Image (tube, rainbow, N blue to C red; front, side):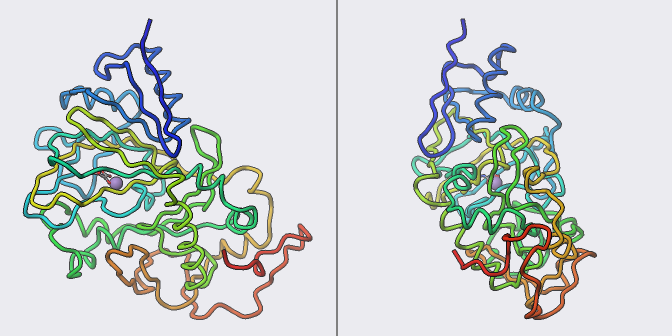
Amino acid sequence: MSSLAVHPNETCGAFVHGVDLANLTLAEFDQIKAAFAEHGVLFFRAQHLTTRQHIEFAERWGEINVNRFFTAHMDHPEIAIVAKEPDDETNIGGYWHSDHSYDVEPALGSILIARELPTSGGDTQFASMRRAYEQLDTRTKHRIERLRAVHSVHHVFGAGAYASADRGDFTDRLGNSDGADEMVDVAHPMVIRHPLSGKNVLYVNPTFTIAIEGMDHGEAMTLLHGLYDHATSDDFTFDFAWEPGSVAMWDNRAVWHSARNDYPGQRRVMHRITIEGCALEAPPELQRADPTLAQRAGATIAGGVVAATMDGIGMVIEPERTKRPDIEIVGEAPEDEPKDNPAEPGVSFGDLPEI
Ligand code: OGA
Ligand code: MN
């Protein structure tokens, strides 16, 4: 009999006890998969996995994504090193985000192992985007449920980001800025049907989301920042304190994460393996034929300049840099945009108040 037990947090994620990730039975793995779909992030204590065992556990979930921007483990390129040295000031992942949202098929998630920890501090915070969506007021749900947001990697891993003084001392730990600059921005529905849980989830994040298709820049930023304030409420966030042997596995489509940078002068080294994901779909009931959607899919980003939403860095992106061939920058949004959807009387998009 397995002693595996799942203990959900009230706010986000669950602890899994009574299990050895290096020696899992099929039944235990099935229980872990079910808990992962339900809770979005799982925490394990006292695991002591070797690098080989880390890779083997990851391979049970799917194909491994070899990271394009982080330093790789010397012997195992599947493992990305997430490190902060004693004299580094900046940390990787130090602002709320969901990894790889800038990809057409964003990564499913990552398995992160603590290899070297500061004596205190260095927690990772997680926020449940399923709870955040569920707790939105109905009007805001309606307002966002047919919208698509644009996600970009340029201002975070591109050459321009390195040129910025605010970029600090990342240069030794991140690379391939040319590869980042080549990448085309992508759009995903702002509300997705989660591929594992089947639940609706809020899918935007403060680091990589730069715009909302068809929406004036200022209006989009007001809407997004309202969502970010809501989603980082104490009701949906959990602070995970790492111990030697701790493992966290998160689903990028279900949670955000953010690493605390509160251990100056100390080293923190984490090993991360990322699993490939899939294209993300809006909930099927929101995919009905809709002429206003067709207009929005014509995607113009109005307003001239797209400002990155990564507050800590405060980068501004020129419109030419949103390298999407289907996006035309048209300046100000037209005043007389049609507001009503003739196919669905009563549903309108333009006249809802700001949240
Ligand atoms: C990551 C990340 C957070 C941390 O590995 O994607 O954001 O706490 N890490 O190291
Ligand atoms: Mn991250």
